Length: 258
Image 1 (cartoon, helix red, strand yellow):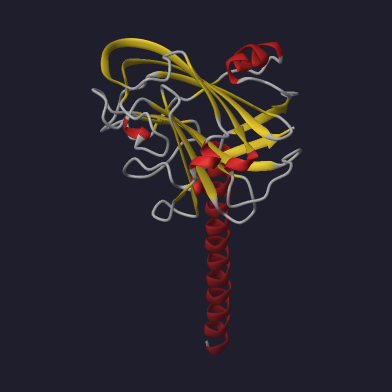
Image 2 (cartoon, helix red, strand yellow):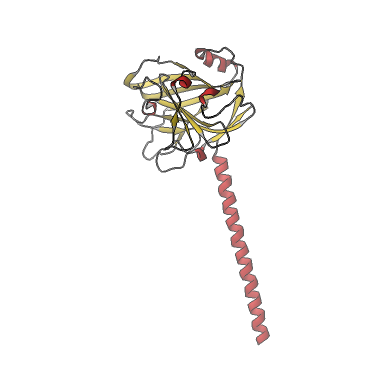
């Protein structure tokens, strides 16, 4: 009888060990599956290098057409319960020896450009944005542009620790807009507009960047209009937060510079 009890105890220990091993495998599977889901949700964009020597910004859309740089839609309405409006927005991005070349197209129900001076609150106007991490230190730049080409540039590792670029740095950004460059109050009614930017690497003022050839960067693209008749917050790469927040680098997609 004692031998039978010992056998039973041995079998129970063996089964308990098997159960624990299975639970461990299940936990590993859950972690791996979550990682795969997160990875699969992340967007990736191949960024073509083109020759832009001597280029003026008003000629940028035609050059991108010639180089067959395709538009990419911005469609993620991450906070649909509170902000369901989805204007039509797309962008295309290329790069040159010393600059990013960026072109946005927008069609929305109203448009506003109250801010005409750089580093103002352009995000509450009709605004498009490009956030990017150009170095390996976690510092990202927010480049925000309203519909008349007024630009804000900030740098830092988080939302609350932004440092604005100086006006000398801002003056290096070439801008073009189909709506001109003069500020105006909100115009109600469907409006289509475009902006193009030539963003020299000197804009990344906390880094010394001479070349980005062949680099893989993290970044995201946005459309917003915090104080428009219909506020909205769209992103290229999805963001999983409770409230609108573009300053979360872990939700940046991948930019592969060819």
